[in-house]
Image 1 (cartoon, rainbow, N blue to C red):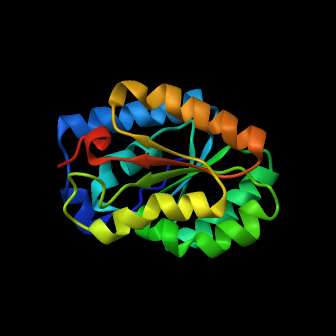
Image 2 (tube, rainbow, N blue to C red):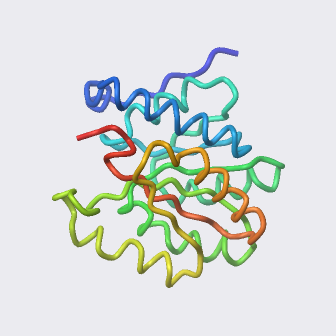
Length: 184
C-alpha cells in the first residue's frame, strides 16, 4: 500500500538543511531502536524534516493530527492494540493536551513517548514564557522529562525514555532543542 503524503503546505518550504535531515534520521533511528512503531505528529516548522522522516519510514505507522490532544487518545488506542507509541508536538501543544494526558494516559496507565519541541529554551528567543513553564508543568503532572541537547545522546535517551515509560506506565517527555533538531 503506498504511503500517503501529508501536505505540510508552507512548511514544506522550510528547513531543508542537511543538518536537520541528519538530525531527523538519527531521531527516527532512535525511535525504532527504542521499539516505537507508531508515531502521531502535528506539523511544526522546526520539525518539518523530522515529520517527513517519520512519514517516509516504512517501519513506522504515521498518523498526522489536527490537534495534539487527539493524538493522546489515538496513541492510547494504538498502545492497547499492542503498539509502542510516540507523539511529536511543540510545547504549546503539550500544554493544550494536559487534560487528555491526565484523563487518559495517566489515569489508565498508558505509556506514551512525548517528543516535544522545546520552544523558549535557553537561546531560543521565541516563546520564552512558554519555555519557562514547560518543565514545571511536566513535573507537576508527575512524569519524567529529559532535555535532549546533543545529537550523540539521541539513541540512549530515546531508548531510556521508552524503557521508563514502559516500566512506569506513564508518559515520558523528551524535550527537543533547536540544536538537536539541527534548525536555526
